[in-house]
Length: 411
Image (cartoon, rainbow, N blue to C red):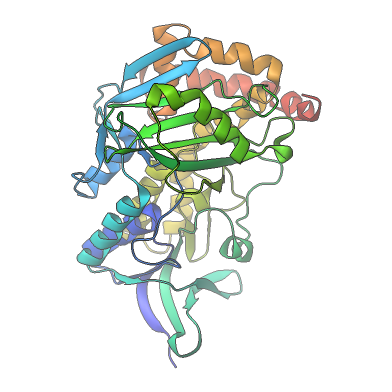
């Protein structure tokens, strides 16, 4: 049977994959998306949307009526609390949202289908290789098996798996990655207008953990409660996420008047690097491209942006799109994400972590920089103090990075 031909084939129907599909279908391209889960499936996540993510959803013309609007972030480090609103800029909206993924992803999937993309659910797809070139995908089994020829294959598979192994796009060994866990609980504060982040998170032994605990009010009677940690901490492999979440829950239970957990806590891995994000005939977007902020574990906004960018470059010139995509993503995000990974090795040292956390919210000016970092509002085009601080941090941490990595095991 001859292969069916599409302009673009997308593996993965999360925010990055559907953003690409929406962009492509609205431009008149023939696009197909293979999603291994069901329509309306859940995805473990903190559910928080930064102002940057809202800007991308606005660009995609996705209605936000179903999302709970958030105007800022409450940061807690030790006994100090800073509650700040998202800044007003000419780049991003001054509000974020909490939108549980089962509803956010459904909205994006439906928008892709409405735009004309072919959505195929409960189907695993793998790239077809002709030498080093990806020529499309093979999907399904038995009588439902399909061979798709595509001018561009977009890998939007999230954390590295079978597709990444086939393409040599696994995470970089010994680089930072994260683990996170979350559940939901009822609370009368479900309609709070601020996210809450406890930066001074502690592990089973009472020692500081490089990561944070979050309370993300969903506006539907519930709050997404969770926490995450970075792999740079001593004893990371022995870290019990369920115990860490339960300890955090006890800290916030009275203040948030929490009811029982509404579902079993679920954990997931946060990729923060990749060995390759493009090749002949393919690009990786979102988490599959390692586009996750090491300082907050957030990547939905990068997924939306990178998905749209890949298609825009394909429309401009299909032949040069993969290489141009890699170049432009690098120019926009690499310095910031590299700084975040280096910073994670810095705070992996407990004797640096505690004073560093205290400093992060010590003054309103410093807290505003922390807010910009936690809100994914920093990249190569960020003006003002936050942009300059990140530029200096990239240079400074670059000098000490080898030492930080070498001394990690003794930290």
